[in-house]
Image (tube, rainbow, N blue to C red; front, top):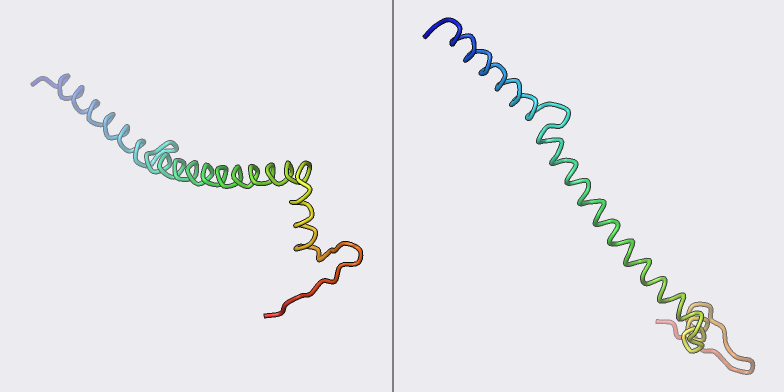
Length: 93
């Protein structure tokens, strides 16, 4: 083979090594992409969890607006309120 062909093959080989090195260790390497994908999955899980909390809160808000029995139960259990003339007994376990 001629010297020109050897130089072309050597240049292609060096170029291939540089490309592989960039893929493995560069700014946008495969490792970086995997780490970023894990972070995205973690954030998506947090978003899903928070969306569930938001949905529960929306239901509670709607119940507070429309359901008088829900409000009464909440006031009695959480805040210990009672109607006038009622006697409240607290059981201690």
